[in-house]
Amino acid sequence: MSNTENPSGSPVISVMLSPQELDRRIKELGKEISDDYAQADLVLVSVLKGSFIFAADLCRSITVAHSIDFLAASSYGHETMSSGEVQLTQDLSNPIAGKDVLVVEDIADTGLTLSYLLQNLKARQPRSVKVAALLDKPSNRKKQVHVDYVGFTIPNKFVIGFGLDYAGKYRNLPYIGVLEKH
Ligand code: IMP
Ligand code: MG
Image (cartoon, helix red, strand yellow):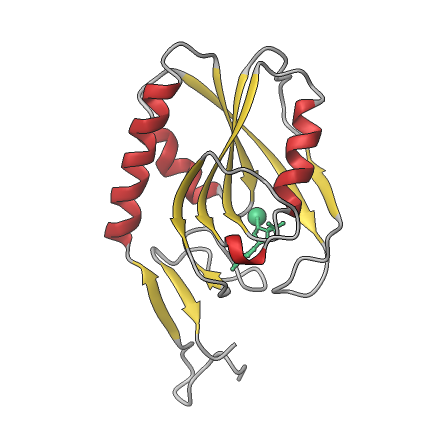
């Protein structure tokens, strides 16, 4: 039994953001993005794996025509801490030159992943690049990065659910939670 489990064997998770709160906020973001990108050639770039659920909900809240592409990035280190070394482990399937790119991330934590991705994507000559992150932990920044659309600003706690994992698990939770005995 791991220390994330109580004596009965189930993990101790407290809810930080309910499914209803997430749903309401993502719809608001979708409306804001639809207004801002009315005249654009929008492509959502979903950062795997953590953003897949947010991206699925966000794209269905966006009413302007757009395409969606995926890339994967990993930062190596301790399970709950970024090491600072970021690598692209899976690239986009299409060029983004001339496009209006919106990077869709699960969380901006140290900012290292996003700043690496922004630098990498900007080199491909898109018309514009902005960032939408479901969660923002600004107190843990190591690199300053501007997040244009923030779902929720949260305290410096390790969160799981709604796409975010701990050691590969808990992505399926329909809420954002905190592993209490972590
Ligand atoms: P960064 O520290 O801003 O580079 O964030 C890198 C990645 O770490 C994020 O895209 C998440 O996948 C992961 N991450 C950061 N904070 C958390 C957290 O609280 N829970 C789960 N994953 C996290
Ligand atoms: Mg991630």
